[in-house]
Amino acid sequence: MNGIAWMIVFCEIAFWVVIVLGLAVRYVFKRHTLGLLFLALTPVIDLILLAATGVDRGASATAAHGIAAVYIGISIAYGKQMIQWADEKFQYYVTKKGAKPLKRFGMDHAKHGAKGWLRHVLAYLIGAGLLAGMIYFINDSSRTEALSGILKLWTVIIGIDFLITASYFIWPKKEKASANLRS
Image (cartoon, rainbow, N blue to C red):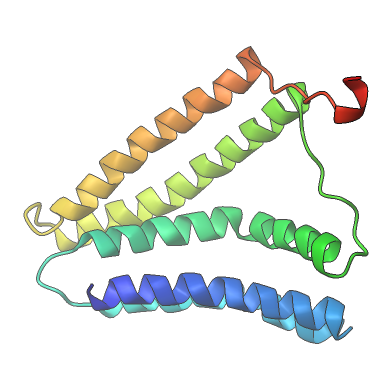
């Protein structure tokens, strides 16, 4: 694995460590301001990865460079929601004080899925913009083949995600019958 690949692994681990530390400090140790400071460090991790990708002067752009762009797009588009999701789970499962996480069904589930797909489109636009920028900046298709491959694959993935999201409207998720109602 090259340096950028290790940097992506480091940043992903650091992202979740910072979130868990922020939540623990916030709820377990009752230090809300310090917890918020930890949570505010998540965009700094993206900047570190962006800087590392920018200074890496390899002979050719690798798939790791492409994945770094995908990671940054996803982190920017989903970051706040990932922190909110972790916050809800932490409050309910660790501190036992939060509300039970909501389960969605029917059209509510479909609409929530559609919002998630739109967020995926935002992540795609950010990441694809970074990929296109790298391809344009390098200006040598033989050296950016991996980046083009990542962009093509992500385009297919976003199409598949759209089909899955559309299926939620056609075949809405049904709530499972409770064990208490079966007798």
